[in-house]
Image (cartoon, rainbow, N blue to C red; front, side):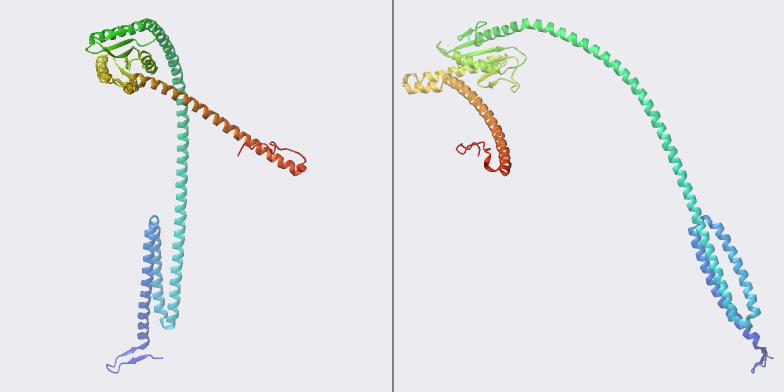
Length: 422
């Protein structure tokens, strides 16, 4: 059948089947090229992603992509030839078949890529497992090495400790021997010193007493300086103060001490001597001051000073005694018993005697208070014990009365007995 057509304008004749076949071929080729281009672009994007994620398989993926491109080009050429040969028969059917084949190829490639990823993952997992095993092996070896080093170090340390211990024992024994010898030498030296000082302590005390008497006699030539004999109870030295008329106005007693430590018993003894002798002031001249004193001062009614301070102290006390005596002398002409009683009450004799009475009273009061506290404590303890006995007896009585009634008398107290405890 003839399919030639003649142009009415120019009169040219052409075959319509060829024209339609060429147009359809161009149209389907263009659509195929666009879809093929999109497929290639998608494959390239996916390939780029795989390249970024799996650098270790770049060469393998590159080869696969090249093979895929070559096969795709071959398929393209094959499809183009087949399309040209059978475009007049079933263009639409062939195009769908080719498209399905491309989709199937793309799915196969996707499956291959998935398998490649899985293989890469397995490879990485195996590699990581090998690294972990290698690290564990190194760690185990390191631990064993450290344990061996620790054991060796402990052994060496133990041996060194034993050697040092032996040396220390030898050193301690030698040191103990030297210390024992030194202690024996010290004891011997202390014994010899004690024996030598024992004879000189009394002599040193007597020398200070003599120097004190000479100092007082030289400083106060008009006063009477009395020495207390050895073995006689009382102060070491008594100064009878006289005014410029030669009249006695008072007494100062001195106790001389030349020891390393100050004893508080000296104060009470000298206060007792002051009351016995009727002295106005008492002074302790000592080499060692009390712990709470750094220089001259008054302690519990007695003045305490060193030998270098005694001259100044004696001057002050003597001047005070003379002034007090002059003040009393000015009141003698009044002759009133009231004034005499007042002078007595304000005098040192009454003051010292009253102090002695007060000290005895306070000592007795404290003793009674301590006894009372002890007895009250004892009474409280006995009261608690009695309460415990009564409570237990009440429990037993209640139990027995619950069984036998009131036939059994278990009263510890009669009804007429007074209640001892509240």
